[in-house]
Length: 249
Length: 189
Image 1: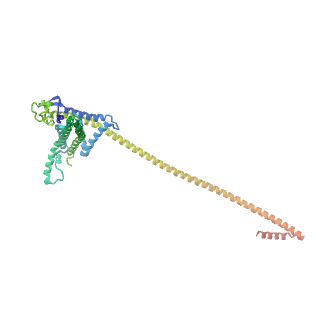
Image 2: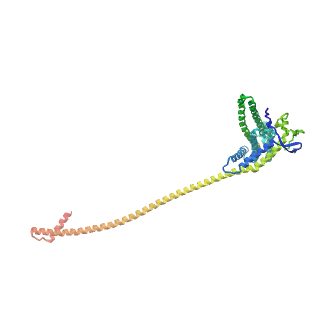
């Protein structure tokens, strides 16, 4: 029986060391993280190595990524948001490249683990909080007090704003994690129907075409989701950073 | 990045895949893998951040800036050249207009000069002709006078001869001349 959960197993390759009692291992997840870093470096550094006036394919891709993220930041957080360009770019590219790699059969998808997406979401959350207080001082609290709200419902609105602020890292991380997890389980389940049906004989061969088509369609959808979730993660990062940059708006 | 949750002693051995297949939590919620993943993520993401911020983005950014600057420069150069050609065209046109005006002026001047010269020439010629005409008229008048006086002499002689022939009398000179004069006057009138 094919196990759709098996693909999410984190498997130790070798031990790096211990923190207290906890073993720190180099796992398949670690390997795919390094693959993502290597691919991004290769794309961005190798792509710009030619420094051509008329870019080739790889250079176009590198420039496209650069301008796409830069424009996303400019449109959501303003020009001041470009301070966080390396952070947003790293997040977007890391998530997108690892998602794309994860679609290849037999690979591991880093962002299908809540701990990874949560770590990235908390990185954004703490960046926003720390930079928000650094830049605005106590004025950062203004983000919880929308202007133009009648005084008698203000306490309620402030309560909702504070609550949603602290929910941000959860929604931010669970959205990516759940999308990737669900997509990969669906892919695996439909893929496992193919050999099951094919095992039934001649009729099964024809029946197996249906889940095969489904897997192809789902793979296309997953390609979209892989990009879209990275984009959503990046744009939410920009929106949250916008709060820190313009607390008094 | 130290993981805060308590790990039961012995869970570290659980990263073996076979043991995980049965009776273990769903892989994303296996807490014993969290520390490893967080440490890997920390290393990978810090490395990525440093590569991206120190090398990759400045390089791609400089390529883009270079291109934007090049395009801007080329555009400015094209603008400048266009301005220059416009100026040259304007200069050419003014030059042409000036040359045309000058040519017209020269033409007009020449025409005037030639007119004046021909006028003067005509005047002197006319004067000369007038003088000549007057001379000729004078000559004609003189010639006529002499001719007329000759005619008178001849007429008087002829009249004397006719009278002598007819009457055999030699006429009186004075009376003959008077008669001839009055006859000439009558024929002239």
